[in-house]
Image 1 (cartoon, one colour):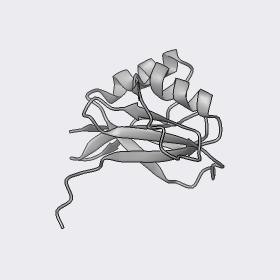
Image 2 (cartoon, one colour; image 1 turned 135 degrees about the horizontal axis):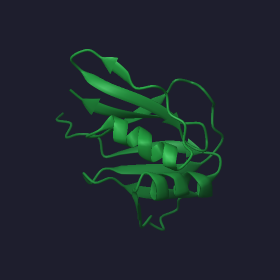
Image 3 (cartoon, helix red, strand yellow; image 1 turned 30 degrees about the vertical axis):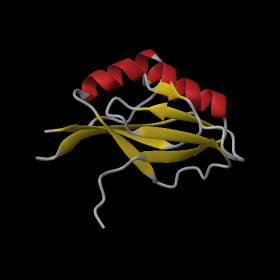
Length: 119
């Protein structure tokens, strides 16, 4: 077996409209067409700049579990500034010596989102 990489990440969100607005309007992801196949759960598919995808699915959300995913960014301090302009609160930027700078926020459904700048 040869894995080629991550194709998409799927997140459960309890408010699909608010979550879509957060990832589309604040983080700048592109809304993709979602196939009309027999998908029984409402959702939104979003595209990342590298061609990978984020799938939002309307469902119950377990809060504060520590589960998260990370976006790689060029400048974590700029991310903090831009998120603050939208009223999004982030944690103080942390440093993992020799590895990365990182900060976290939550999306409208309480999912933990990391922003990671390699150093």
